[in-house]
Length: 83
Image 1 (cartoon, helix red, strand yellow):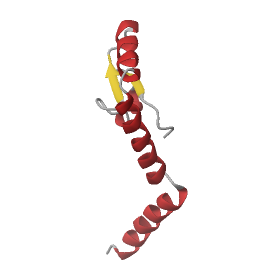
Image 2 (image 1 turned 90 degrees about the horizontal axis):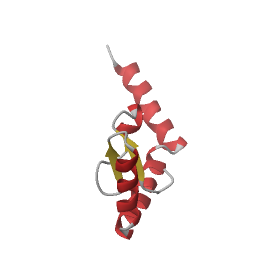
Image 3 (image 1 turned 135 degrees about the vertical axis):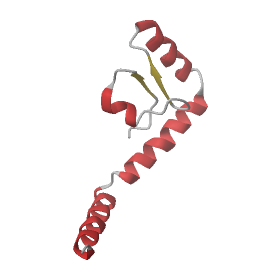
Image 4 (image 1 turned 180 degrees about the vertical axis):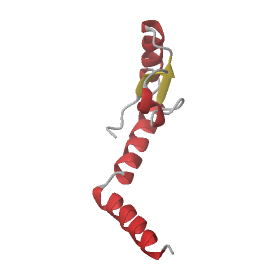
């Protein structure tokens, strides 16, 4: 959400659901060299930082309290319509 590139380890649990495996993010083995290589690669490519900023904006939009309230309201309306 901060609009920065992220490097996560393959054993990272839930974070793997949101970290892109290419573009502005990397998922690597839990190894110091792999983490360093991925971070260095991301820092060397400014276009990946622009992608990270765009994806951060998308996460902020999706997780905006008003947007989440709209989703929950639709769930409740759907539940009320159920037989």
